[in-house]
Image 1 (cartoon, helix red, strand yellow):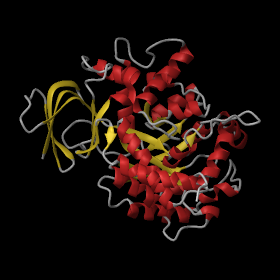
Image 2 (image 1 turned 90 degrees about the vertical axis):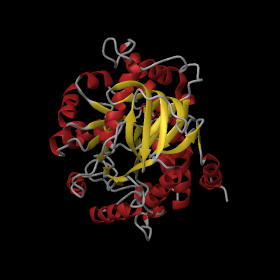
Image 3 (image 1 turned 180 degrees about the vertical axis):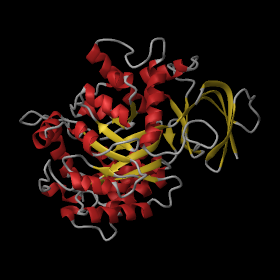
Image 4 (image 1 turned 135 degrees about the vertical axis):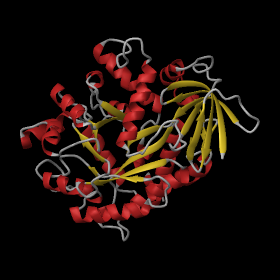
Amino acid sequence: MTDLWFEQALLPDGWARDVRIRVAHGRIAAVLPGSAPEPGDERHAVALPGQHNVHSHAFQRAMAGLTERRGQTADSFWTWRDLMYRFAHALDPETMQAVAELAFVEMLEAGYTRCGEFHYVHHAPGGKAHADPAAMARAIAQAAAATGIGLTLLPVFYAAAGFGGQPPSDPQRRFVSSVDGFARLLDATETATAGLPDAVVGIAPHSLRAAPPAMLAAVTALRPAAPIHIHVAEQVKEVEDCIAWSGRRPVQWLLDEAGIDERWCLIHATHVTPQEIDGIVASGATVGLCPITEANLGDGIFPAAAFVAAGGRFGIGTDSNVSIDVAGELRLLEYGQRLVRRERNVLAQPGASTGRTLFDHSLRGGVQALGVAGAGICPGASADLVSLAPGHPAIGGREGDAVLDGWIFAAGAAAIDCVWRRGAAVVRQGRHVARDAVLARYRPALHRLMGGE
């Protein structure tokens, strides 16, 4: 039994003062507001529930900053993708684990306590299957075990290079599976994650261009209760190609043909119409927004104001992991709306805190998208907690929602003090307890990925 005491804590029904949180066997056993601190309590200033990263490609953390040189023609998502394919070609299970460990360390240090890993590098270079179909997925699971992060692992189904079942290109052969092969991969991934205390395994058809309709239906039926994540409508070219193939935009095609519901998370959905927004809201699906990556790749800006006003649910993700920062993703989400609409405090209701609005929406959406049974600071939930440093200039002296506004819009990751995952302290004074060991494994792995011996 561990007792943590906080001057203030964000509970499901709002802020409370003088809160003791009792932790037993990785879960919150009791939440006791209005409690005086006792001698055995570990004392902190502010407690928040950990956030959920709904969309990550962990291996791309190692290529952060390597694509910021302009080519001879106009750069785009598609030119970036060519560089990413070349980088992915060098991955093996050992380097995958080392890079994922660093990404997971940085997620925990930023305030994420669970990661939805959209995992698509399955095979050896050239497309030959590993003896263990889940060798690369096992590396992700081992990285989660080494760092303590909660894991929702989303093996990706990838079969085609474009709409209409175009044959995959050579760089894509590391990703490609048949439906039967994907079923075996899914079984093996469940075995690989069995040792993690609360792992979830979902299904991730990569995109409509990579998963032809009959195959999409077959793979999403493999686990009737599992989360389903799919990239959709990220790029204008993708929308145009989908219209040329089917006569419909990609989100509309999914709404008409795929039977999407609360299990689905539509990643990006950047280019959607008002009618598609209404359809997503009616379906109960979440949208996975990754504002930093979407800005980095020049994707566009999701119409979040209209979506939230219609009752839409969203979570946030780090995607390419070019920058890992809960506050940064939420801040840029709001700032994108401000730039488009030339207004301030766009996503909040009149009189409400924008920071609190962003935090609450992303927490609820992340819980749904990652298949978590209960979250937040309440009895029975996993003891996944974040404390903020009272000495930070943007945090000290503030109470309630003003703390969230200060963290998201002024302090950022520098305000993170401690993070507990299933009641175990994995971050102290802003630094992951295993950071040095993780870096010692990461540095030689990066050297190999960059072409060193």
